[in-house]
Image 1 (cartoon, rainbow over the protein chains, first blue to last red):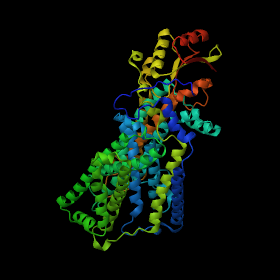
Image 2 (cartoon, chains in turn brown, cyan):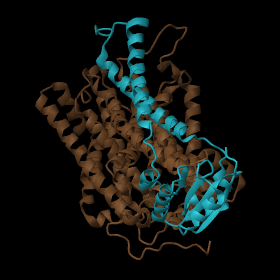
Image 3 (cartoon, one colour):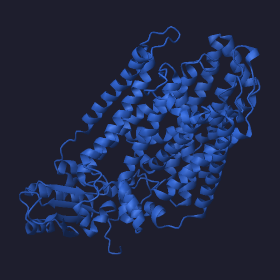
Image 4 (cartoon, one colour):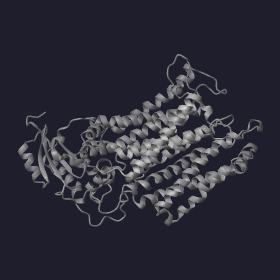
Length: 462
Length: 178
């Protein structure tokens, strides 16, 4: 549209979040072109292919699991939780950053979140999907999962509501549902944009159906804004509760190394820590791949780095408190559990997690590190590995050596453990790159509100 | 819905400020059946168009209360009446253990009522709407701002409404076919 008169802003107000020079139309075109017009880059095919191949590995691992049973994994008495629950806790923690960005930062009026919330929420959904795989498969007979739900049945039995494992079912399924709703509500106006912009009739039909006839009416926007705020207000306590409930799976038990009251905040902080690491690990390649540095700016990466540093210190504090509590509490078994962690069979993993989660991220204090995308990317991978090791340590080392030496054992992961774990990474990548290709990965309408020309002038207000 | 044979008259503006001023002017002129269309939410429009406070918070509150009661009494009924079993000597109504599922169902029901309530209040999904008949309207989801005086307005007269809107210096004024 060559005849378009645009209001060109010579000088954006100081402290703007996105790069200067954007207009409503350039924002719309840049984000929607990724989906609608631009040629799909080679990188996308590579990443999608890797994700797809690992997804095939996952399907193979699940098939073998269903044919032979959970014995193909390394879970043996006493370590019956092994990789399955480690991966569950890790994945669901990663999801937490998406909800934190979309809900908590919205309530705190952190407007910079507007350019990263969409893909972070998608990340949440897919991470929860990957997390959900593990408890389901770990049941051994996943087709009977509905036995965990209360429903009238001929067996005359019902779930036992005093068990944290039943709480988990409700917490995780509620979390998945609310995340999906929040994500979809956020997408509606952008789906309308895609419907109006696409030239492909099939695409228009699909986006049109999904947009539900959204037309940007002022009456709708006012209800919509209320709904977004309310959903954010509901998602905020929800996200804090989910990892709290996950931590109850451990703290309610009396196993040494698990039975402590500070697990809920410790788990939530760890979840946000690993979640922001995943946000960075996705944002850094995506923005350079699609040339979106003007929308996901260095400021965003810097902020994410700072949040990682802050939550990393909460996690570090939890590690120290854990060891202090064991020593000061005077419980022999608790002390032995931590001694085993630091010096026993799993010492390598313990000290690696201390290195990955506490020592190495201290480089984030330096602005030079936070302003360098490659270094931030490396830091985020280090933290993701560290957080996985932390979950592994909590679960495996405590189960392997509890009260009686006669019931001690060692966990050895099998190739099918690894295949299932890598397989869910494949599932995640597959879904995520499908999302990047089919839906706007940055919230178009929320980024429009960041522009200086989106503000109504004083004369019009009176 | 009206005997004018059209849905209304629509003007296209370049900026949110122009749209808000135009909406104010149309209110001042006496038009009441107005709607504005913009690519992003504009807080000032709510006031300019005198939109009522919506009832969504009440709907969500009701949903949350229903969810909380459902959550608690589901557990109470199962644990105390339908399937009582003694777990480590705890009372059958061990309510502290029921707090979590009560909380989760409160959030679940409240969120579902927020989304469904939002759809219901907006009248969505709505596959057809007359404003889409305006060729330029696709820009309402990109970079343009529209004000529509609807034919249902008691003061509405196609010629007068068009003339009035032309006076606000829009980019374009068009009739919206039904």
